[in-house]
Length: 235
Image 1 (cartoon, one colour):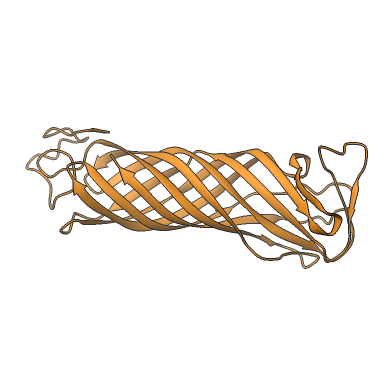
Image 2: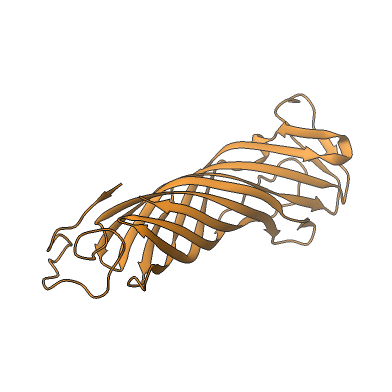
């Protein structure tokens, strides 16, 4: 779904046309606004700033969303959209810790030292970025996208294998608002008209702490990192 540019339709007019060609648009120009959907397999993990709490392995997940690009020149656009992110990670503490679970409000669960806590996180994210792309080369357009991702936690669960606990609600142990940066690069393959397939690789890292430090838990900063594989379609 696109809004095509007419000559002079870009800010500043750009008389005389544009170099190269892009899929979609009029006279080889990219559309002023383009929309796409994507479903990205994700690998996520934690990193910490103290040795008493450490990451133990990565978790698979996915990202699903809709993106919108507003072009202000043939090779540059502002990008935004809305994503649902399902991800997680595993943390291990060097000392016993008390852990809060929503379904057990009257007790604190004690997790022994060196026993993992497996987090399952879901976020609603609104990425805000700048997309740079080449002129179309044959059927291919190469692109990169960098920006910030404000996000809100919409679900948080935890598994504690040593206590045989699984899918326990643990939102009280997690911060509800976070902010990350993203970097992505990839290829768009023209399928004719304004339609194109997208393949890309992206990295995302949270600026803010993912977990809360409640009760006797160590004071730390847990960063959440994601590696995503972009598969999408531009309409």
